Length: 176
Image 1 (spheres, helix red, strand yellow):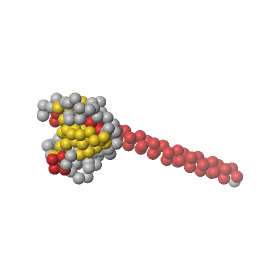
Image 2 (cartoon, rainbow, N blue to C red):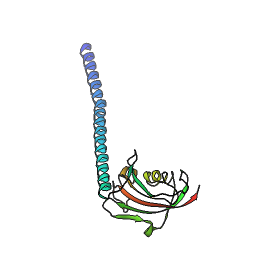
Image 3 (spheres, one colour):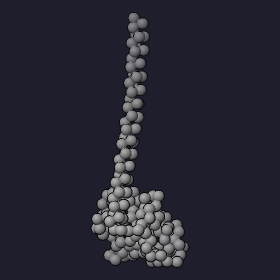
Image 4 (cartoon, rainbow, N blue to C red):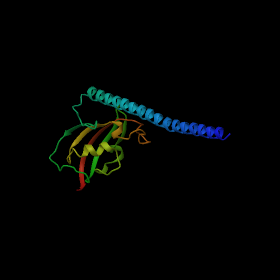
């Protein structure tokens, strides 16, 4: 009888141990599958965004350069004004539109904007462009969604996952 109890105890222990091992393995497999799926989806979206923006640039015959981050830009009015740096507070005129031409915001309607470069809380790509510019210069640039408002848009006029076309003019260096 002792042998049977001992055998049953060992058998139950092995079943529980095997079941626990399966339970811990299942989430690892699911997690890896989810990560791989998300990676593929992100790669697809990045490629799609890149193709849409490149097509837009070609249709409009823009002579834009492309940064390694995926930002398209053209500083079409150059000056010998002061070069902008992180921490500068500037004022600028702007027009923001979608690739379909819909104007979302503009300084003509909403007033001249002000930003502290590098710590504004605005779109990531906006600061990157200003770091390439000087006071008085004008630029056109295109931010892919991941450098603009990302997955959710701005919850007002910019839809989710939108590439944005900016036309900006740095009008004033407020603080340096």
